[in-house]
Amino acid sequence: MIADDLDPPKLAGHGMPLLEIENLHVEIDGKKILKGVDLAVNAGEVHAIMGPNGSAEVDILAKALLKAQEFFT
Image (cartoon, rainbow, N blue to C red; front, side, top):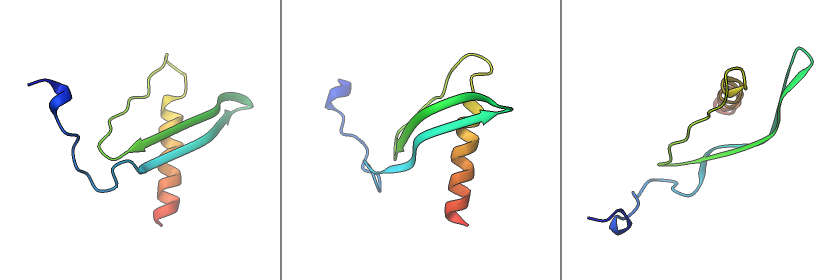
């Protein structure tokens, strides 16, 4: 079987972002570590945030989770 022959999974909300971040900026101790980051995660997708040690991968996820928590509470 060739991968191109497989149908994509039928997921609720497929094609609509479950998580969307636009123009994220993070500053810590006066140092800009993120500037203008955009991210959209749709149902059924898997993403990885990678970078050298200290390049703010955790900050992106923390900001996203905080915003999600604010939305749902």
